[in-house]
Length: 150
Image (cartoon, rainbow, N blue to C red; front, top):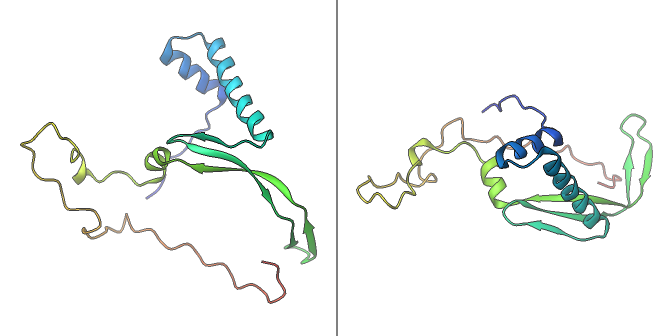
């Protein structure tokens, strides 16, 4: 499955779209959007965790110091500890963005108002997977050297 070509959406374009959909002035929407983003950064700087149900969680984690190797010179390098922002995707976003396209055989299976509809198709686990739905295994990392810190 190939992904469609993607487009970069800027904060300005997003604010304009929201303003058009809500009928609010663009200036007001841009200000609210900027304040929202500034608030996220401020909370992360303070060490707080931000949880948006069904969307995801932002949190700051401390990355431990480690010893790495420059791939060009093979020189050992000390990498200091640092703080990094982690984002864990929420269920709704994962369902909408990360999963494959829905199976057309199962569309409408959740419709409870039509009692005369045919029974839903068998669960996807029982159906044989088509080549388009089989995901290849990720490549395995090369074996590490005995004195490697990795």
